[in-house]
Image (tube, rainbow, N blue to C red; front, side, top):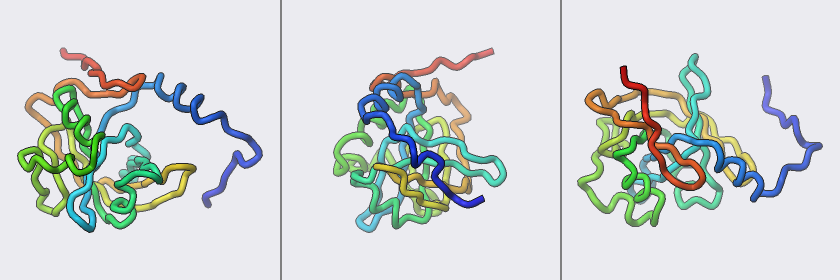
Length: 174
């Protein structure tokens, strides 16, 4: 199947309507880290999603005005950190000014393969960036899952964003 647009004849709603609707839907909070030309790059994102099991593919979006876009366009691999309630301050740090994100060296290290790896998170997914697709004011990144690490001790409750704020989603414990 080839890529094609199915909606060219339809006009979309205003940006504010789109934002208002999407704020009503909870989305998992993640941090994506990768190497840039000038060192580690990372950003908070709520767009990562499972795309396929065979092959194992995930996707995420990067805004075309993002300070991280150039690094994403040049990167070959990245790590997606799936965050829990205990990682709220980390999510806020990586949503803030880019010069602060990796300033505290006690918050991160490097994976054996070289990518910046944050301490914390419920799981970490190492991915190979496979396809970059322009999509409106964002770039859709399709990535192949290469490896995964899980917090086996106490992953805590997942962290989501809903109506512009972070919230924990209680998990069912048997």
